[in-house]
Length: 344
Ligand code: F6P
Image 1: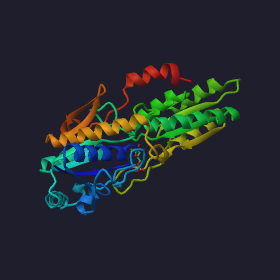
Image 2: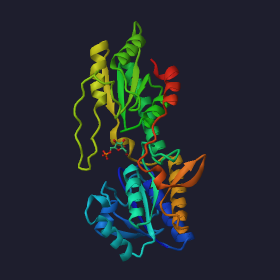
Image 3: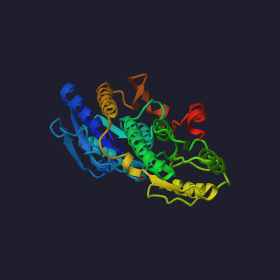
Image 4: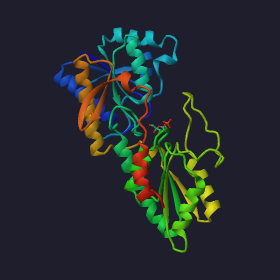
């Protein structure tokens, strides 16, 4: 077997653990070869690659980032993209690709499959918003990083009787916000799935701070939005792939809280620190299991599938079933935890 591997989209702790596991399983068990392409599909389109073997992957298990580099380049961004991918398949005598990527990669992998390019996807994103799997690797690490940041912010907020608004990643979904908000004992947690009312946020904080000296942590996902017409927001910039460059809702919210309540309010935007550094033990194990399962799926010729976690087992699900779908925080779960924990 000859397998192409690439890491695509925003990076995520555990990418190297997946690469290492694919390489070990292919080399040691399936007696095949892995060709790693640099910077996602750019490496395939421009023939930028290296052979990956067990020796090359030594020491990478705990390392964040990706030894292959990543980008948001997809074949369908170019008129001759698919032809160039097919040419790479022929040139390297590949059976197919293992694509370690998120929602964009799933869509492209599904299209490539229809165009005759065999792909298997390993679901990757700290946001944990890929449908069909209970967990993506990188999510657990991001939640740990946010929780330990919130723990630290509690003590400084208490020392000054302040509100601190902590902005975490989550473009369309609030999985990181809800888990970190719960684990960190946040006063309020605001997520994209449930528009917030700035007046209610301010009321809750005013009630909590009334007459007593108190600190509050408000966790807000970067994609959270106020109910329509309740707050004016800036237009977000768009990057070269058409993604809105989010980040900043916390500043607007903090200014609004301070104006309405008179309580001194500060902002911490955790940003890319959530994606950097070493994966947790949980993510290393999950990423390793995904890598092994992807190599096995390729060896079995089960192309067009995504490896997924379900009830602690790794299964294969058809890409067509999950591409284009977003796994959101369930309203019932959010309501259930909001009443006792995020109401004030
Ligand atoms: O990995 C997904 C994500 O973390 C989103 O939550 C966030 O909006 C996005 O990546 C930002 O990525 P970048 O800054 O690399 O464009």
